[in-house]
Image (cartoon, rainbow, N blue to C red):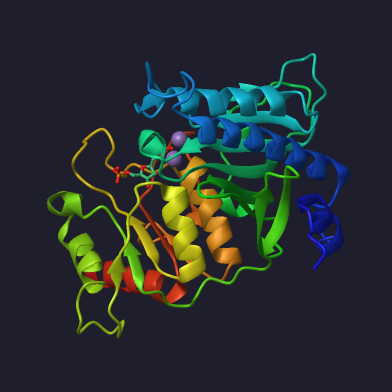
Length: 337
Ligand code: AHG
Ligand code: MN
Ligand code: MN
């Protein structure tokens, strides 16, 4: 079968889509180039001085790893001059990233987690880059964008996706017309279509959660997690616990095999009553993909894509994956309330 590149796929299979414009295609190509550079560094990690911590903390208070910083810099450098964006936001930067006046602007806004799962870098565990693309509602694209331009509901995303740097480098994305996966063929340096129109199983056999926080969850959350371990629950099957600690890797496995990933509110850290994961940088893009693949994503009560962000680095509890599994979570929270 003739291998299909991302660009071909975008143009061939989505020509009806308003997203097959030149602007969007070049946005995606610049993102892909950035991911290739990050992938090369991730695959060499340990050979250079790219490992370890920078000694700083990011907007979320996380310790910044050199590779976090590297990925952030590569993406900002490449995307600010691509001529397709009017603003960016990164998990690694507290406020809105403006496009310097010397570069042409476009109508799109890029929101990204440059490197997800960075605590796993030294252990050679899969990590990734998560991205969201919105259209600016601003009339005048030449002015500086402010927070109100970026605080859009997840349902407003025109595209969402991730790169996963693992045994191979894979890109998964959607423009609202199905979820498509591409695998980097290093011999030609191209991402080639590896799975088209992914549909996640309606019910899985995997649940993913960090059970170490059991005593920091409220009673209803404990009942939610217990349901996936209870042989007599109406889920009617035995589940396995799989938790890598890299959201992109856990999400990607569950997308393909079926299952539910959970990061509930926990009471370990009074500063973060809404849990650890970020709405704009992690939950919203993955929720867009999950729904496009026939799955669901909730904070336990509300649809993630309906949440109205108030702050750029706002956290949210996240339950995401196979429809039947996520519905079970919602049912228990509903009974519990
Ligand atoms: P990031 O590296 O971008 O900060 O994300 C890390 C997140 C996510 O990848 C993962 O699911 C979660 O942290 C793991 O958190 P715990 O170690 O608390 O389970
Ligand atoms: Mn992350
Ligand atoms: Mn990150």
